[in-house]
Image 1 (cartoon, rainbow, N blue to C red):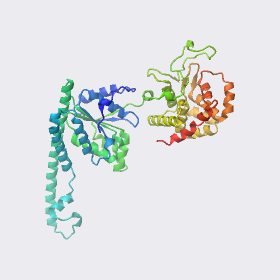
Image 2: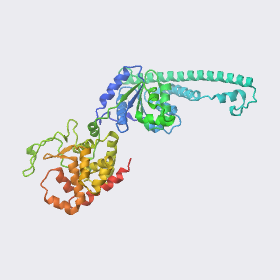
Image 3: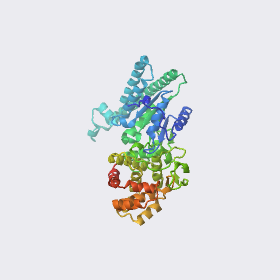
Image 4: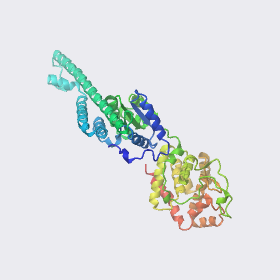
Length: 477
């Protein structure tokens, strides 16, 4: 099924500045006629689908473009049929109605010829056609001269069949090239610009069955690689290599095999964790309002009697040029503290959101959930130790292995570990212990004080349940 480009406002949610990458690649492809198949490479969770969907949606405003989600067609028996059908349907929107049926009818007929002609002819089948004898049943008693004569005729038939197949394929490629040029010309006339190559985007190839992925790449390279058409294939090359190796066996060089299908490769940048976090949207209406400052606070912003304001430390995570909100700041601070990689970030967000939905509350403690999820995933042994005993040696290991980022609250810069340790102390101290701590608390406006109040009174039972939901969410993959 093709993506409805009109349903997308191109790049309206582009928080990782991908639009510039798309424009760069468009100019690169347009100016290099020898580059017909480009792969956009990035691991799962790096935003490949967002990138190609928005790139496609923007291009459809000025040129003919097609979007093909390989994963949605993985059930199909033949990759060639699935791709041809998608291209046929998409071209209907670019070629005037009066010409479309005739032009695409011829395209479909040639595609049918390819399907019939490209089916491998087995030598034993041809031998049976000429001799009337099944190869498997041939015995030594058969006259060797007769068998040699049959084999010679079979070889001649195979050669003629191959020549016919090549002519059929060339006819199909020529017709497809003509249709691509026609679609490009009609779109250019519509928007009053010069004709540009047709772009075909293939997304989520790495999610497909290995055999379907291989077959689709082969079809693109052998049947659709024509002048005036550019293919952009988005996938995780490393994952695809493993899939191919699983099909062909251990020791098979999947990377070398894939290179034959791509004219160029572009690796989508995903190492900027802060930009990735900025691209995430957290529903603040469900979360408790935590006293985190996103930028330096002036003394005029505080009430008399509170702690004096301080400047943010160099180690504190602030809003910065990206304009992070306080929940993005929390997530980034914890992510950088535990050095979470992209797949781990995606998994952590999924777990936190699952916990939030289970709590069924508009007062969700975002910091507590994020820290618990990260600690459990990255250091399960230490997580269990602080959860069961909260001993000093476990915390020493945590702070030693994971140097902490700080959160700024206007009156203090507080380590994420230090804040988390207050939560664990409250968890182990019980309601009475929390009230004793509160009676001595002089840190109004700090995150330590905020943590104490999260366990105060009837909130204790709710806040102490977070580890239980963290364990449940951990089983979600």
